[in-house]
Image (cartoon, rainbow, N blue to C red; front, side, top):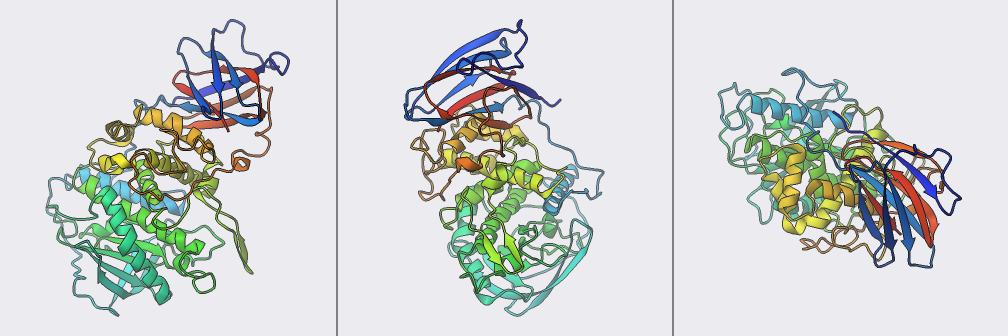
Length: 535
């Protein structure tokens, strides 16, 4: 049963009494006093089940007007979230967007592999793919087929453009191109993947492939990783339209499927990697950086399939698999000199205007989307991207506040599933309150990201993690002007209602110029945590 919280906020005192829509007089009301200052800019109120409403007085000791925010988090979730089952066996799902097709297909295949007993207790299946790339040479060709989310069959003729061992790893990198990628772009992908992305990602989440005893899967001694720089959907790439940046397709690890690539492989959008290569400076351009960081994202999906499905017999829910990949993206912000949260410069072209796009601007459209669910029924690209944005910010929060203790490796090695696996991993690495605790703190951490309090224990977003496995995390900036949709940022003294889904947070600016003291009466549903933040 989905928990839904309904919260009403009323303003008392300085606005001249109760707002027009007051709560019933018989309602039991708790009371609390909160004092905030620049050195102590936040405080939490945990809803008391015996009091459906609370009268909360907030006082600021700072004579300078500051913005006062409240975040309301529904943390009552662990017993209510279940892992969805796949559709009828062997029947492809019907995703609502191209980004969801491969995620749902991978989850379905993981479920089927586990249900058939093939992941841990191999059975004999008919092998129809037997490809050996070890002797491939530069200039050799191969064909790659896949079905996109609209059912179109995409066929690409690929040429091997790069083959070299990865330094410090017993793995050979192969890069296949479809003929539209400049050599400079291909070589930059090879350099950054070999020197940064592959070693960083595998050190966090484990080897991408290795020992197993399943004859239906690619050989365990296949010390290879392949990147295809080609098409990611049937339509031609154009930067003015939404497009799949890259994907990992678990089908390519199965030897009993005719179109399988027959090796560990990541497919990247060649158009995005190549776009503006010559005119915008190549390495470091916005399109290139998005493509490069996505390599780490997709590599995590590959590692997750091997580590959790093949080795441990666990099908990772889409939301947790995506969250893990977005944590990897955050780990790469420092080494790749990319950023999280700041607006990327808009790029202009005679044919189109590209708006500034990043995970932060995606997330602020819908902070209240549930962390522990995924947009499998998204009605629009914006709704889907909101899930990516929220998961990216939450993932960055988790990574920056626990990675020194090895959250990703602990999660990868967990035998649990879904929310319980993440909760257990967080508690194992010392995150206070596990998943519910992290849920109640991450949005306040975003609010504090530009302030002097951005390095408070448990609220780090700007600086490195507590134990600092990487001292150069990318910058994180949350411009206040972008925190709210138009009209909500200056409202005060009114009745306000909203519904709050499991594992989600709603944020509201109570007063943009807060000084002195004010009192609010707030309906507080069981399981909710309110955090007041002075910014």
